[in-house]
Image 1 (cartoon, rainbow, N blue to C red):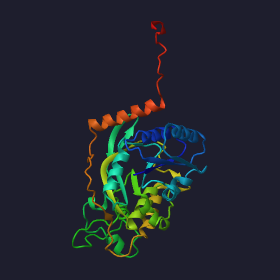
Image 2: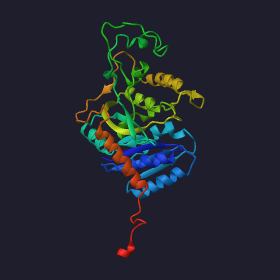
Image 3: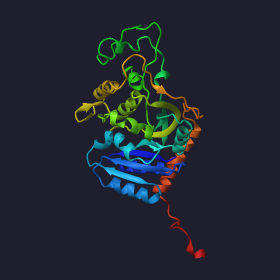
Image 4: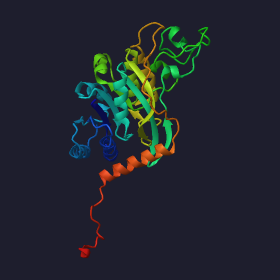
Length: 331
């Protein structure tokens, strides 16, 4: 199975070079890369060209010249130009685990009704791992009696936090990724994987508007449109933790919009795609393929990460074959 790795970047050439190299080191070899560049520098183009020279795989480079232009639009463009059966998204400051694509290939091959999925990640800073980000589905959270009251009383998007307690006799689960988000339940975290043909069937029904929570907007739309999905409890990416200059930094604005205002708007906009009525439920698929459930950072995970960093460094900073101290007089 060919897998398309969708890489989004903006003026972070050093990180981009490492991210691309983590793709080069995959145990699954049938892949292509599509790079969406919102930056205004030619350095990223140079890095992508160098990456092309190191591999025999197809690499497509798209540059907008406008900051944040492709940030959200790449979600809709990628399925239309992808040659892969499955797409996986990778931000330029993150790294794939060495067996990530191999695992994704196995999951989507042996689960033919799976349309999209998301997996666990582990945060890192420099060469240290420090926190696993565990993804969930709406039914992974406890049931609540007042889960649906925000949708029942009047307009479903007015004051979503003002719930009437004990509305139902029996507790119920949240119905969708967006519904869980409205309850402040965390579901999704990258990496995100999608079956290309499944996304193409609904792509024209999705409107991408957010530069902050574009992942919630897109995956929430796929969910509300009825696509089948799963949460994969396995670490598949290393996510770089920045001390500052993060897009989610408190008070940061993009085009005059803050993160939290955008979250509230996106939740409401996407939820209009949800069919009317109280019977809608996420189309969650059970994964039959066994996988390693990653909840703790153990020595094996640390060792795999250090090996990946070492291999990346060996490719990007190759050591000379002959040392300057080599004694040629011996020959």
